[in-house]
Length: 501
Ligand SMILES: Nc1ncnc2c1ncn2[C@@H]1O[C@H](COP(=O)(O)OP(=O)(O)OP(=O)(O)O)[C@@H](O)[C@H]1O
Image (cartoon, rainbow, N blue to C red; front, top):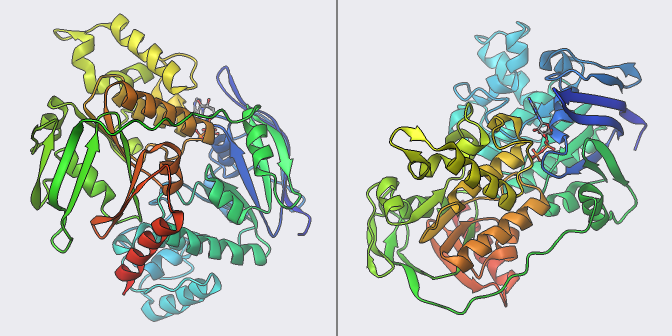
């Protein structure tokens, strides 16, 4: 490790009365991955936005290689060597252009490379790709690439700027385990080249794999720095929460009445048929790689796409919803995966975003009954642990993780028969994950059956049964109580090898 590339002293930032950064002191050394951990709303994204020129700080100093650094725009930050890869995969690439043009996008934009100079462009792009170990067909349009490859292209493009600091904001949230491994390999390379890396994540497995040091943030200040090996991840979690992680106990219900029964379901032309049952008060988790068919299964349950074959019953009666409206009428709710894009309405307040799916229940004719809506919103904000000043604040004043709690929580505000949650834990911190998990379990215990699409480690925290999906079919089924982890992993990876062959 060399000296710090970035030195941050007493950095402060407020939004109106909300003092978000309260004096951050932090060094980011070259050739090391600093993992930044913090609860939802701690101020991580705000810190990143100051470093990458989206926000300017109210007070404090940042130096980059000893020189003052206060970028007035993202373009300025980029020119100075601070590169940020945001969570949103489509940031940083132009889908319509091919890989080569994307790698040299900035040179094309500033006129130092002509788009028309086909072969020369290809050759320079090859140089960029080789420098970061990217093996992709340079002539392919980026639009046709898997998400993971697009992200690697965005990072490789950033590398053309010879970055001093690369910031990755929850980069693996949409990646499969194998894809994340490729990203980690790239990060290892950049570390060896002396780049300073700031890596934001809520995932412990990522943190253990990639961190050289961990910085915990709480309420706008650095609350812990952990550098000694082996890294004290439990201490880092304690420092970010200000206390120990509270546990949500799992109580396995006895197998009850069958609520959902799927028989001979075919989700894709080339997929094997499968059966699935879920009982009253049960939490069934579906896990598997990206593209294994988990979301297709969720869509079939919610009437968004009909299975190609097979039958379903719900609480004993035939169930073949032709639309989400029919599904909701039968008491089947779905919290979709891409919530920020699909489900939250940016110009509504928190309460309205919570009441949106059931607005009729809070209205009288065309009048919305504010009191009824507010009572529900107050209850859900409390139950989901949404950190906000008032449920009447705009949804965009919430941090990403707290927006997520609203998007998932709204579906638990009303009684359902079957609740389908597609990746409910994306972007939420470790305590919020436990809290949402406890709420999911309580919902199941009270009145519903829950089908949950989740990562394996998340599934293990709250599910009664874990089903592995591969190739749009079921590859395995396990009771969580006596889970044979190696068998699960084998089912996941065998499917992956099959897909690669
Ligand atoms: N543009 C803004 N206007 C008003 N308040 C904001 C704005 N951006 C962020 N905040 C507030 O700043 C606080 C910190 O948010 P930030 O997004 O930095 O948190 P975070 O640590 O990244 O959380 P998460 O893990 O949930 O993404 C939150 O209370 C949020 O409501």
